[in-house]
Each structure stands twice: as structure tokens, then as C-alpha cells.
Image (cartoon, rainbow, N blue to C red):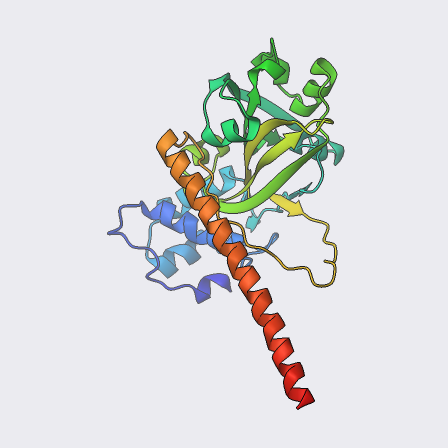
Length: 311
């Protein structure tokens, strides 16, 4: 049984974090790590009390928190079981947004506009070629559960008269195409894993430092002009990214690119942005030089072996 493999000292009453929260974190890890798959019957309150030497009230608080987060299901006479995982799949390589993809699968998708105002962000300014930006922050939910937080920056000239109410339960890309005649046809995307900050945790209803998947990038119109820069934080326990893989042509070399760290809330100052750009360019130059050196060494090694064979 899962609880038998746990260390009895894993809960520490001297720790700043309350015991019920420590217990809920232990159970969360068991669920997210696969040790407690969906449908697994949970240990009883007495089992937890005996294992960790804690009170019944501590166990009940922990189980209540997990129930509120839809991680376990509780029922009279049948105990508690690990709830089914509600996973939502998103195809990263498709231009259609989260709302369109999830809605097409039959899920009920809702969108709240948290803010729509003039904003500044050095990454968005560089990508869009203007400092006159409109910052749009939205929260997407599926079947009533928060699933993603979306930050989008748009050139203000592109969307005159756009108001927050226009995007409630609506797709931004559909609005751009239908109202402003701007179709979204291409773009660049990248994905990274991060831990949720306190603010992100509050917005998405997660515990602090919960895993998130960040999808960030740009989108272009049919003329190739960049029209949006965005960062979207997805709940890693609910969203799965699907990617169609293709084979590389023979002899293709993968060139490294400098690491970019997203800034969840707030932006870099001008000096930091300039320094980051300078370091980025330097890293790219070094990577290219190393690849070129490796290619020359490989060529010289081949010539040397050929020469030896002819001797």
C-alpha cells in the first residue's frame, strides 16, 4: 500500500507550514507522480493518524483541500478515491488558439478578461517594433476550472476601439479576423516548464510552486507582419502539449540558442533588456563558432584518415 512506503517522519510539527498542508502536499506528490493513479482508494483517516501520529482534524483538513482541488472524490460509506484526471490536449504546432482547440473537443471553455490597458514590455516592443502597446490579460477555464493565464501584447494601432467586453468568452484571433480584417496565419512558439509564483498560483487556483507549462511566442498576419506577442501559463496537471514530429534531413546539425527566461509579471528595464540582448547575441556567436570549429575538425580528421590509408 502507498502509505506503507512513506517515511513516518515526513511530516514535521516544528515546520512553519501547518501539518494539514504538509500532508496534502505528500498526497499531491503521490498523485502527480503516479503512485496514486485515478481510482485508487485512499488510506482511511485512521491509517493517516497511525502512520504520522497526527489528529483526525489534520487529516480532514488535508482531504478537504484535495477535494476542493478535484484531486480526490469523497463519498459516504465508500471512503475517498483519487479522482479521474481531466487532461486537455493542445496541438502546439497549430495556429488555432487554446479556446478553439478545447471547444472543438466538446469542453465548455470560458474566458475572463482580467485587464486590458496600455502596457510596456521590452520583449513585446522588440517583437512588434513599437512601444505603443495594448496589454491584454485573460484567464481561460474549462468546465469551470481555471486552466491557463494568457498575457498578450498588441500594437494599439491594430485594434482601435477594442474593449474588454469584446473578448469575454471569445477568441482574440477570431476577433482580429472578423472585426479588423487581420488573419493570424503563422508564428513562432517555444515551450518551457516553470514553477508557479504566488500570484500565478492565486489566479489559477494552485498551490505555490506548482508546475506550469509556458507557451510563448509571436503570431503573424498573412503579410508576414508580427501582430502579437504572448505568454500563456498552462496548468501542467491539466494540459498536455501534442507535437507532430518529422524526420530531419540527413546531415542536419542542431544549433543551440541562448536561453530566454519569461518574466511572468512586470518587465525588464531598458538597461537589463540591452544587456540581455548583448549577451544573447554573444552566446549565439559563440555557439555558431563552436559548430563551425567542430565541422572543420571533423573534415580534417576525415582527410587525415584518408591520407593514412593511402600510405
